Length: 424
RNA sequence: GGAGAGGUGGCAGAGCGGUUGAAUGCGGCGGUCUCGAAAACCGUUGUGCGCCGCAAGGCGUACCGAGGGUUCGAAUCCCUCCCUCUCCGCCA
Image (cartoon, rainbow, N blue to C red):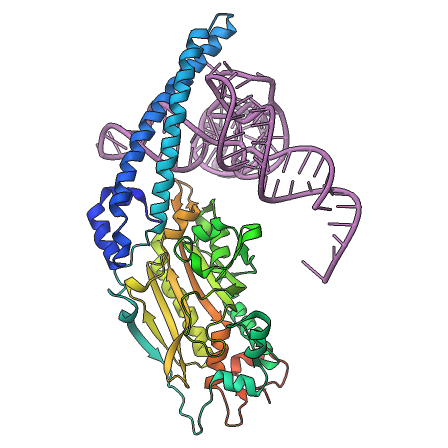
C-alpha cells in the first residue's frame, strides 16, 4: 500500500511512477484523491461534534453531581449524538472505499528496475557453463518415471492434475537440500522458522496477495482460512501490528513450508512434470530491515541465492525484472534462472524482492529507536531453495548415461553415508 | 467437541456508567547524589488520524482483544466474533 499522503502531495509524480507499472495501475488515482478530500472533510465535521459532545457531557456530569437538572443539555446532546452517528456512517463508507482503492494500487518501482513488461527484463550476467552431454539428455520426468521417483499418474488419480508423488531417493534429495539451505542461512543470521501454512485473510491482504492475486489462492471457506502460496506470507505477518526495537534490525528468518497455488490461468503452461504444480516445498528467507538499508539487504539476499546455486554447480543467469512485470508488492525483483538442458534455456528457480514499505504499511510492521517515533520497516523476501524446481535442475544437469543422477558434493553429507548416486 | 474463567499501557496489575489515556508496582529514559557504579530521591514514559505551524510543537479526536448496540456520556452494561487459561472428551 502506498502512503496516501505521498499521493496527496505529489499526484503528478505518483501518476508518472505508476505508469511504469502499467496502464491499470494509475487508473484509480483520481478516485483516490477525491475520496481523500472527502474523508478529511467528514473527519473535521465529526471531530468538531465529538468535541462538543465531550465538553457538554462533562458539564452534565458536573450539574448532576451538584444535584441540578440537566434535562435541557441532555436533550441537546441527543440531537448532536444523532448527527454524529450519521457522519460516522458516511465516514466509514468513504474510508472503506478509499481502503479498497488503495489496496489495489501496486508499489512504486525502483528506478533501477527496467521499463517495460514481462519480456523487458535485464540480464545482469550468467554463471557457469551449460554442460555438454555425450548422450541425449532426458528430462526430469523421463528420468523420474524410469526410476519410479516421480509419479504424476497416481498424483492425478488421487488429487488431480498438477499433483505428484515424490518417491525414494528424491525424498532424500529434498531433505538434503533443505538441510543444506537451512544450515547455510543460519550461518548468515537467519532464524529458522516453520510457519503455519493456513492463514487469515488479514495476512493475505497484509502481504499484498489480496486482493490482486486472490484467484491464485486456495481458500478454506468453512474456516475462513487460506493456504499460503509461499511462506513469505506467514513470515511477513509474524510481526504484523508490532513495533520492533530498531537495534534488532535487520530481523531475518528462514522459513520452510509447503506452498499451494491454484495456478489459475496457467492452463496448458508447463504441464509436464513437477515444474509447475499445485503443491511444492520451499525454503524462503525473509528480512525486516531498516529503510535505509533495504538496497544492500536485497543484494545480500541475492548473493545468498547465488551462493546456493554455485555450490550446487547449477549454471544460471541473474535477471532484473522489469517494472511492469513486478508483483504488486515489489519495488524491485531479481530472478535467478537455472539452465535446464532439455529445454535448452534458463528457467526461474529463485526470486528475490524488495517490497520497501509496501507490505509494512499494510501489516503495520514498524520499528522504533531510542529517540524519534516509530517508522515503517522495509520487507524483503527471497527463495533459498524451491525444492521441486531445484530437483528438476539437479536431475537434468547431473544425469548419467545410465539414467541415474549424481549428487553434488555439498549435499552428500546430508544423505546416507555412501549415497553419491540417486537411483543407482 | 462439552463445561467454566479471562482478555486493560513494554511487563505485572487496579478500575463505582461521568476530570480515567487510564491508580499502583516493575522496567525504560532524563536528572540529583557519587571518582564511578549501586541504592535512594525527583522528573518523564503509548499509538493512529485531523487541523494549525517553516519547524520545535500546539490543539482536537480516536484507541482498554475485534466489530456492533444501549446511553447525553462506555474500559465499565448488552450482542456477535477472535484469542488465552482450567477441567472433561477425542487425537498425531
